[in-house]
Length: 149
Image 1 (cartoon, rainbow, N blue to C red):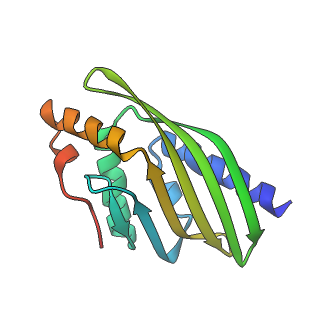
Image 2: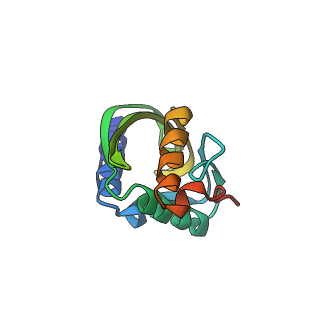
């Protein structure tokens, strides 16, 4: 039953993120956390503070305003004191007039229901090509350095 509750909460968080409600997601974070996104690009890097995560989410939605997420699968293991989950997500949007599709594998660690660690793995070559196309058509946030702390 506990694992099912965690799965439902993860799916809800992705639905809310799809509505650009990143504050709901931020409220799920523990006071001390680590969020890393693979790659050396505008969305890559590692963050540890609510402020840097706010900036990261704002950049995500500035760069990809029409982004859509579809959760394909959620796998949950563990107990409330240390829960681990893997989430598989399809990402869809338009980039400079062309469709952009990618897949994200996200690992989460929760401690007593709060997110303590997230790692996002995505096809960084596809993402970097999309960011370069956006920069070429005048989206300056697409070529900024990663937000890290």
